[in-house]
Image (cartoon, rainbow, N blue to C red):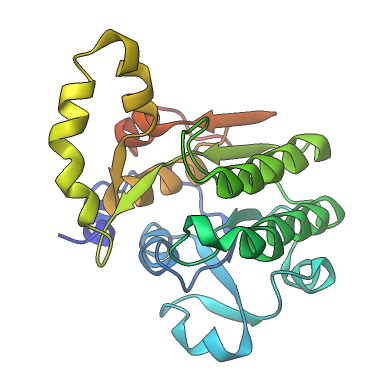
Length: 239
């Protein structure tokens, strides 16, 4: 069953339709998230490069622009928007440190600057679990992105997955027995939880939930256990 189908079935009558701008909405998570948001009644726009505009999911408005340029992002933003930042280097690995700086960090800094200037209501950023024993350059870029959001004083939600299981991204399933073993060992139990696996469905559900139920102010951080537990009910909607 697709994440969209799950979200549709769990739709609540008190959902407040939001104006949502997604950067990176044609990518791995965005391709599932955008239809889920539309199914919940949200008005979604996707900032995409000219060559990717045709991949914007049906029902969303395609805004052609450059996520690495704050002026370009600013033209796509409307006051009061919820902005979801999903831009990142595909298939991150240890040999892509320069790309993490050029794409991942540059894009969130551009979005933060545009969000401040444009008067957004809520910024949602998909970061990465921290700390971690590997992928230091990737984690450093994402941590710097979080720092930029905090310095801007924006109402924000940070999600920190480690690895998102989904189509074409399933090899870590082989590690599940090791996670189970680690959860039994006191010295590594907390690290195993923080660096656990989440599914596409869980990520989509968590992202929809934080769009609909943002904290009243400040920065909220959702780690892996909180992403897994996110639901689309049980909490009042924040207007």
